[in-house]
Length: 114
Length: 111
Image 1 (cartoon, chains in turn orange, blue):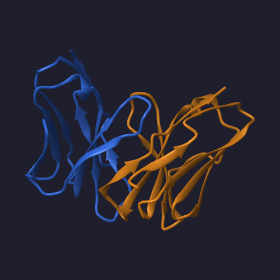
Image 2 (tube, each protein chain N blue to C red; image 1 turned 135 degrees about the vertical axis):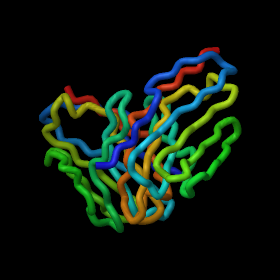
Image 3 (tube, rainbow over the protein chains, first blue to last red; image 1 turned 30 degrees about the horizontal axis):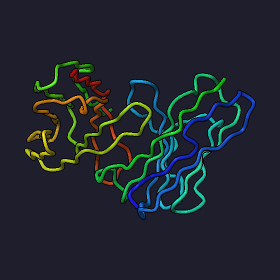
């Protein structure tokens, strides 16, 4: 299995809703990432988990809350989002504790906040 | 602050033509990666280069890492409509999870 699976593919939520994005990989990768990507822009790093511990939080607002239940799963809990949070949310994983080995990305969740 | 300048940002050419995309930096990277992304999908890793002067080929795509490991290029020969997409370069460092991303090149190949 050489994939990163993200669900849902699309999500529309109101500003008062609570929702979660899910990510799963079975490649034995020990680093997992959440990225946010706006149209025609490169991905922006949000969070990094290494060996199931949060190692980097790129000053992301608290309305985004990551969780890593085990080495294969990564969640992103969403609450009280703003319309400007609408974007493609990408999960990625990498083999070791260095990005030099390259990332495997999921297909993303297209989030629309209304 | 490390930066990767990617150029051009947009390129529209006819099928069969050749093209080159550049990524340049004043910083040294341990690796330089190239990704291709289609609309609504995540980036897909095409290649990683780690040695100064390294050249890698992937069918009609040729990737080069500069001797000083500060720049890289992607050359496509005889471009095809299936090459259309957003091409992203990203620089990596040892013992660092983060990649430094270029701004991306939107490539359109017209039949």
